[in-house]
Image 1 (cartoon, rainbow, N blue to C red):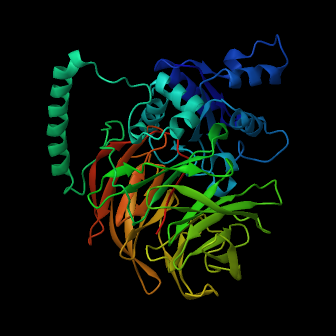
Image 2 (cartoon, one colour):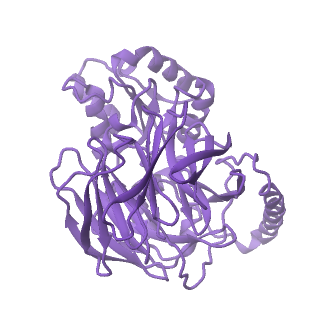
Image 3 (tube, rainbow, N blue to C red):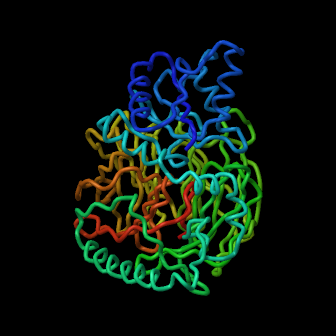
Length: 494
């Protein structure tokens, strides 16, 4: 277990001292400037050394720490940590209410699990942070520093196993037989839980899933991408009709390691996009996943506008969205990977500056959600990509804490908060009607709809839960499964 560097602004010192003391009391080696700065070396040299020798980097989020002011040392520390080839694992925590639109690009939701100390009681969220910090250090090192070599191996077992796990010796077979029997018993218990919509699935009790996938699979595919440490390798997989995840036997490489957004569309096509607020030349890549899981790059190119979001639509189309101006572009993806421009102009004008967007399962409607106005606009995309129609606006009270919105099938959508709160709504005639709300385990960083099921993934501890939402809007969750942690982008094709 290495040290934990805490990056913050002085205006958040009271919260930071409380957090640092709590971490220290729980056995963490905390690197805090006012505890560690000696004055023997220049201040920034000591800060850099502290970051570069720490295992974890806690970034305390507040309006001051994310400010682009030239004297904001916390933001400089964050970009220094994120830019290190084998740098610390970044753990963002929210100390004061801060719009997600203000977050630095390196910690936008979906890239990291963000711990919310504003809407979640301190002691409860502290446990979630400690879960990340107390993860097995040997396995984390193998994943962080050797991810490329691990992913490049073709054995499907590598996706589900601890990368340092050894094969059992023959003398240990009786022990492993007992373990297998125990696992079967637990599986029976787990399947009894599936029918209970209020069942809580803890991301910490992971079970290794089977790893023998079908030889080919013609349905929706999943792509897992991790650009950290310069890795551009994709791992592909699928969720079968029984809610079981499988890694597909083959994968492939992207032409870049800097993608920040991704979307899937029909014909197993994927679009990756790199948004950089400092760059005037955003780039994209189009690829296809074959039935055996092989990813092939079809096209690379550049776009004229720095968009902030990307969703997949029907008819091999994708929608790019620019948050600060509510502008968008609909592009049709050709079979050879080229993008043909359709509509370019304003979209969701009734919900400007939307923080979260999502497309429905059929790829024909798009939701735009703004926490500041608590409004959701639903638009229908013209089948030829020429624009939008049938706009409807709904107001969802007191939902400023939602950080994920996703389709869950049958014209239903899910809103999820980092503390585990969730709510489902039915879409009809452009309006949202409440179905259900409940509590689920917190900390899921990715939630996506694939093969008529919903997959929850926790970046920090690699746990996966796959379930379905019934007609009543309630979640029926399956048992916990286990993957390799750390995926930045997870995308499902249609």
